[in-house]
Image 1 (tube, one colour):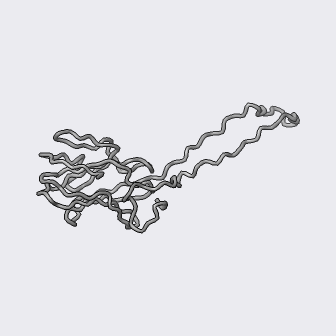
Image 2: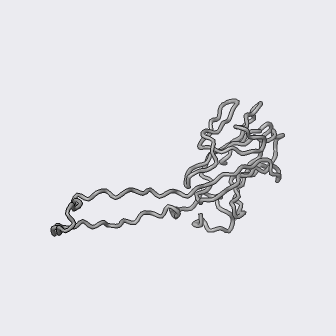
Length: 187
């Protein structure tokens, strides 16, 4: 189970978040009477875990709760399923939901009815670019353009391929985190 849940009297919903609005961040803090999201944000780097919390109406107990992730191309993945205990009203978690760049919606369905959702984005990794270091054998700039350079050994740059930041490692996502029928290596 990737989702945790608690019964909190007077639950805080996050900054300007009504009941049912999923709030995202880099982590969460769970205390006896409070669950909060750390560094609230909606854009995450590819490969970074996502933390979330949502306040829903208090459970009477026995409700079926399903947490799903929908992509911008309308594919749906079940993230979690469980039975709510009486009084549960704050649901939260932190996990690597996906590694593929794009917009996603995290849904909370209780007995088949959507009671909470929130949108977040996974951004493509930005490739690290480094300026070429000056060569120890480079010749200084000529002050006299008619002077011929000496036949000193020239340094040649070697192009070392860098990984393409838009391609992810070919590893399978955690069980259940890809849509049915989709190739695991497509993520």
